[in-house]
Image 1: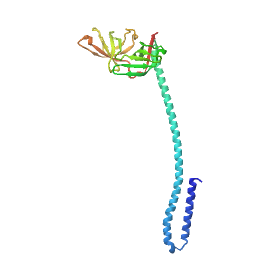
Image 2: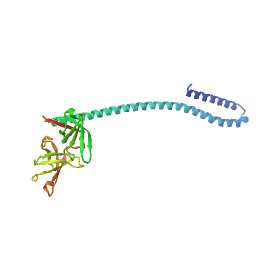
Image 3: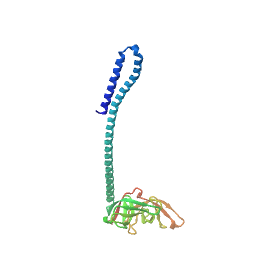
Image 4: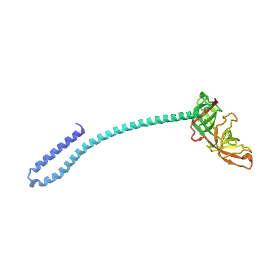
Length: 273
């Protein structure tokens, strides 16, 4: 006999006993037992009502706990479903990222068809007050060695300075230790470009000739001098010219065409086709 049936049985027995007492008292001389009957009624009726209330509560509580168990099961099922959806969403995000990377590689390759290139993406950046270097996910196993130009869809990024079997370290043109020869598109003047301390998208153009006729908003491209970088790769745009009493101290500010803060995918130029 379960808990509910036991409770119903006890309530029924007690109720029968109390009703029997009431019947006996009712059939007895009322004048003689009126006081006793009243006293008994005062005691019995609350007890009877309490027992009936207890019976109802027991029945309701049984149903309540059954509902709790059902809710727990449903909640567990929903949690498992939610975890499964999270896992699927994560997998979709990974596939989306891979597709975007492949699309970026394809766009880069289509743009630089005159070069044999190796696609790569940046796996780490080492930024400090004195230098900035990046590590890409290709190396000697992919035909990548030191002193190879690295480019993006927007222009020149830098060059490799060392390589392992699976990675290569890149010195970007914004590094303070970097220098690159450039040619202004309009005036065709040659300038030397260097990285500026604590600047991530600007270069300083120095060694400007006395006869140079620089023009604001002119673009600057790689000159091809030195053999490190192929000729004609975009470097940036001239945004400011700083004059000086000593002509040798005259310089200009070039804003790089590559946004290094958002750079992710690159190409390493292995050779010209």
